[in-house]
Length: 150
Image (cartoon, rainbow, N blue to C red; front, side):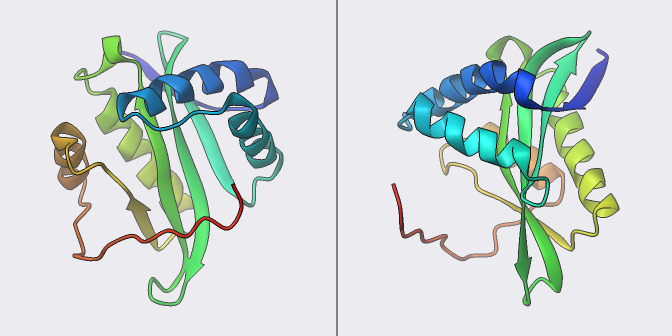
């Protein structure tokens, strides 16, 4: 299993959108391609926002991982969010998720990120196990969100 990570760019927008559509469908999230495309284009144009890598096996894109940056006094400065991790169903359970989390954790260290956060659905037990294996812990708080623009 040869896994690679390639920074995504404008030529990859279609495949990332296809992956996003599949990812969002897993939990029944709404997916509006026009909105997702605008957000993705903005993100890829501004490296200060974070990075998005395609996950590849034998040179074929099988998923993606998105890292977004933030700043927090509580977390001593720059921190990041593992915003999305998606692997095509045919490739799940083969270690690609482990490699992706290790990869993004190392990228964070190189980028001076002090803490890495993520969200995982309460019913996604496989995801929770993967993330706990890599040192993520539930800090007993609730993430609250207020949409300002839709």
